[in-house]
Length: 322
Ligand code: SF4
Image (cartoon, rainbow, N blue to C red):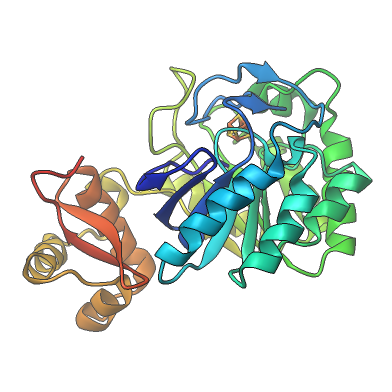
């Protein structure tokens, strides 16, 4: 549930970043690196150094609000202001006050990326009611798999976490986009997928975002699930909308890959930067398919997503890009 940092960064604000899940997103980081109630095998931020479930105040909220007030006027358009970053945001006991204060400063929808482990707490659920979209994670509903993939702080019980998410669904009118991260051989067994499916029936998220590794994780040796496997899981949960958000790393992962389409995309983008909507109109292909080609080309440093005039454009990769 982490978002990588780029562009401008103050102490607590980073971005805006083009986010596949949240569009143009300005990140708000309210947790010191790396404080979390989990130590997930796949975490892109590295190993958890402060493994805790204790909520506390980490800094004066006013400091973040002043940073945000300085940054917001410099950004023409945002899709979300997103609580994210290098740890679990619900561990910050000022979360509710920060959500309320930011809501007064900006009409941009507020999103919270959370591992969901503290949703069994009434105070955490009540503070999150002020957000427009909450994106919790749930990678396992069986205790052994939860321990394996998420390596929680002692005392966290996955049954209680699922009950907390279910309670939150009953109280919250905003959107819940629940992320499930699948690792090959870790949480992809039939019993795991069935238990997760049963939990999803109870939680009733607005959608499930199915993900797997696309970058080096905190722990070496863990393996990504393939598109075919994620597709199979999607079919096993017909009662909930499931979106696969795994990035395509290799051409072989693109069904019915066409080199003609790839070349045509590259040549078009070389002439001028285009949005994914533009590319869909030009090629007649759907966005999901085009996104997979663009992800491969991005991985090979041939194209790059950039934010301009409040939209996400794909342009040719320049020599100076990092
Ligand atoms: S919940 Fe997992 S992925 Fe998210 S910051 Fe904590 S350890 Fe990393």
